Image (cartoon, rainbow, N blue to C red; front, side, top):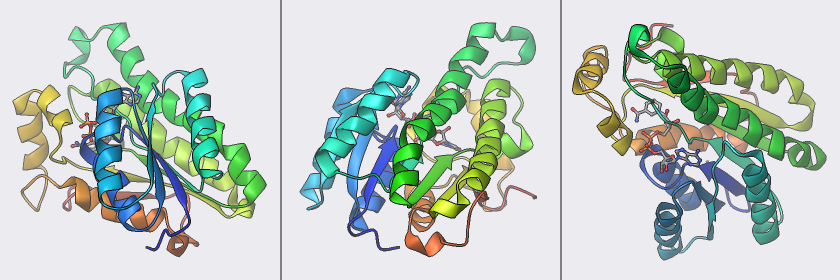
Length: 248
Ligand SMILES: NC(=O)c1ccc[n+]([C@@H]2O[C@H](COP(=O)([O-])OP(=O)(O)OC[C@H]3O[C@@H](n4cnc5c(N)ncnc54)[C@H](O)[C@@H]3O)[C@@H](O)[C@H]2O)c1
């Protein structure tokens, strides 16, 4: 799990799971680019990491904009000279509505942040990783992407797309010591849940054999492994962090 000397970008790291991942990777020794569309949140988490005695850089970027994503990569390289780890964490649930009530714009907004942005971030770092012959990419999918949650069609579909992207990219870059994996959490206690209808959250908890929501640190622990040298024979996989919910 040691990440000393490594440099990691974590998107959507200003709160919730992303914040937990950024702090965990920093504790394991990585220097961190803390990326968020909310600049104040990115600054706060960066300060938290620095207070713990680790290196961090706040980057204000909207990961749906390719120019901003490219600047995110350039800024990280300027500060830390290399990128070893990319964690695609930024995501939104969108409105929790059945298909009859969804607008086309609901679909576009969720696909943009949850899937298109993952493609953009991978594209922006992959040449650098290929050149260096090393990389670890971990994306945050969701159990919704494997099983499908009612009233979350764009979200479920975008996360299924993240799993597909992970499996395809993983096979393209095996020879460069680049490993590409994703994780599929079930309900994790973060501010993202505040945006969901309580009935949707209750439905999701009722499906978890452990009978509770997970914690950001519990996701961060698995991401830490997948981001480390220890994951050398693991690629193209989707790890469940679901309290036993997923059945395959
Ligand atoms: N919380 C859960 O139950 C749960 C379960 C499964 C998967 N996930 C996934 O985990 C990831 C993190 O979820 P969370 O619960 O921590 O969410 P959250 O809403 O608490 O935090 C998400 C962060 O991403 C940032 N962000 C949003 N859009 C962005 C953009 N376009 N560019 C840059 N930053 C952006 C937000 O400002 C925020 O700080 C998401 O991909 C989510 O889909 C969450």
